[in-house]
Image 1: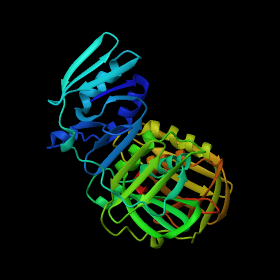
Image 2: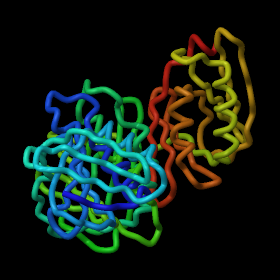
Image 3: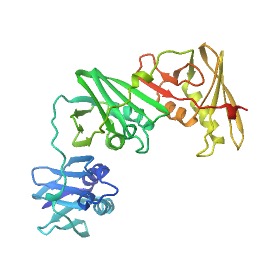
Image 4: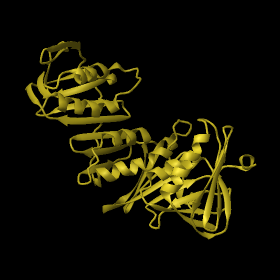
Amino acid sequence: MKLICSKTNLLYGVNIVSKAVPARTTMPILECILIDASSDNIKLLANDTELGIETTIEGTIEEHGIIALDAKIFSEIVRKLPDNDIVIKSDESFNTVITCEKAKFNIIGKSGEDFSYLPDIEKNEPISITQFMLKEVIRQTIFSIADNDTNKLMTGELFEIHENMLKVVSLDGHRISIRNIELRNSFSDKKVIVPGKTLQEISKILPGSAEEYVDIFITENHITFEFEHTVVVSRLIDGEYFKIAQMVSSAYETKLKINKRELLECIDRATLLVKEGDKKPIIMDIQDGSMELKISSFIGSMKEEIEIEKEGADIMIGFNPKFFIDALRVIDEEEITLYMVNPKAPCFIRDDADNYIYLILPVNFNAAAN
């Protein structure tokens, strides 16, 4: 195999597929990036058996062939070569020579025949969404997945399609994030759980164009994302997702409208008095026309008052400040609406059209209030 490719194109492709190289594996071949120049295109591929990414880059193929190169070594070589054309040549013994200007590397590759290719996925009924919207949906929900495998379902996000609506849901046992997106077309009902790792990696490599679309294909065991010259295939998480409808109520005793930035900045200031790992709640004392926020820790205490528009009963309620900050940071509206029932029931942050819903469970604040 012999090919010539600009450093810019090669590095771009390597950076994309590297997201699917496993950090640890008992299969050395999976630690490689496959360079497939067996046809008319140069394809780069990485696959950890749960997540696979393939991308096509521009370049010239002088001799067709396939080679698998250690991902860490190969990516570092490409990153540190001069900004010029790179020539990659390998022989039948998998000896590979990488040259650029006066730099020349000799490394040993592996047979491409042993590589784990992407599974063949049926591509029926593509669900199209703009790159920008998919990236936004991930940003606005991914923070509330669980970060451990205690409950596998919580490490993924629900993708539920009904007619022309896509609902994306994440939860970690303390909070729920929901985004509802209107699609261009109607589709048959689908409900799958996509690994959070897959969505995080897609978010990193998506250009985020508001004009270009991502095509999503869903099968029984896999989900595929296609955009520009890249294909991402991921296994789905098996299992029945939580019954979200039972957790999301429209009932409330207290409704208040508040400036999002003021609330976010106030809670952010309050966390200056909370050391990492300390579970000190932010207490909201909500009365007509104002909300007093207060926090007390070993370092000190803080109070601040914010103007609000309130309907319904007065309430004093406490929350983990981080959970509120996470939700507020991904909401774009200037003014938000909070719905509460009592100090032991969830708080909902939602817009009138239910484009987004954030549920946050309260915490016991009796000790902190004294």
